[in-house]
Amino acid sequence: MSEAKKREGNSGKRSGFGSLIRTEFALIVGVLTAAIFLWVGDRLSESLGHPAATGSVFIWLFVAVLWSAISVVRHADCLAVKCGEPYGTLILTLSAISIEVMMISAAMLHGQNNPTLARDMMFAVIMIALNGLVGLSLLLGGLRHREQHYNLQGASAYLNTIMALSVLGLVLPNFTTSSSGPRFSSVQEVFLATTSIGLYAIFLLIQTTRHSQYFIESKGGAMVLDHDAGEMHSAAYHSVMLLLYLFVVVVLAEKFAIPLDNSIERFGMPQALGGAIVAAMVLAPEA
Image (cartoon, rainbow, N blue to C red):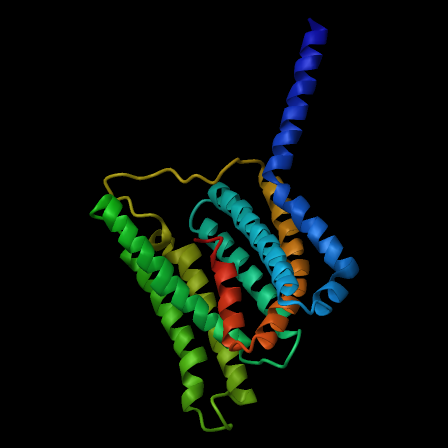
């Protein structure tokens, strides 16, 4: 009897380990890819003269970064379910922003001087998110459920903050006269940074304390669907895996910037395309 229990226990452990490997296989792929490119990556990426070889390396790194980014969002989603709203949405937002900042920083630190890359990427993110993802969600939701219920107070708070920051950062530089071209002076940059931090701090205060009910799913709908975040573990497990995947994304994003920049230069494509590609990679896990 005891031997049978031991065999069942060993079988359960093997099954659990196998399930863990299958679930976190993206981490193995990401770590191996990062190790390869840390060892020979710079020579491999910069010495590729044939367009097909350059494209192969580009696709390889693109898939590895995207897979790791999706895993980051998956673990953030599990933490969001455990923490509940509105903190769950905040965790997802900070995870996506972390990926965005890491990738755009890696791209700007490599290759030609391209100070407008961050601006191009933010513009692409806003267009893809507000026009693409939100529009598609409204369309598909209307086709599926006919009549939908929304939390209008929360949506208004989000949109007002996004519009204010977008106008300050993307539109206002076209009308400044303190420096040549559509750019801010040093004093204006400090003002923009301070204002942006202040607006977001006020938004977080509203989201997490006084008006947190604005950011909780509306109960007015005829049907409330359960949120499926996949296989759930402890909060400590998801936190550790989230940090590991973020580390992999940091390393791979730096290596991905090399073929991305080389491809744009080699084929004479507009520099803004780099921002659009990074924006698509950042938003793909959320889609």
